[in-house]
Length: 107
Image (tube, rainbow, N blue to C red; front, side, top):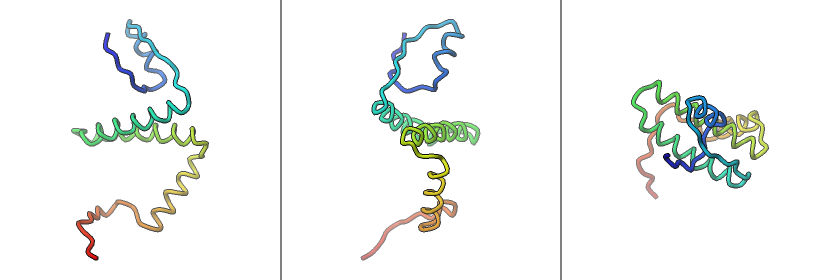
């Protein structure tokens, strides 16, 4: 049996059992959960980077967004507050839509 030792979506154990397999799980403590969310975020970002099609890329973005929703819930921050912070940063520094690539800054 493969050993994964990683955060998975809540219903994955049920899906595994529905496919006639068994698995062992444990529920993480809050601090450990947050650390694993950070690890999973990196994993999903790499999968987004390696996505071979727009469909795969959007699937990975959906996973990242789910992790964001979970993380802000753990920080007790409503999504509206996160969106407000995002909008403030965009207002101050812009977004990423234009594809500006900074090459160097000279003193």
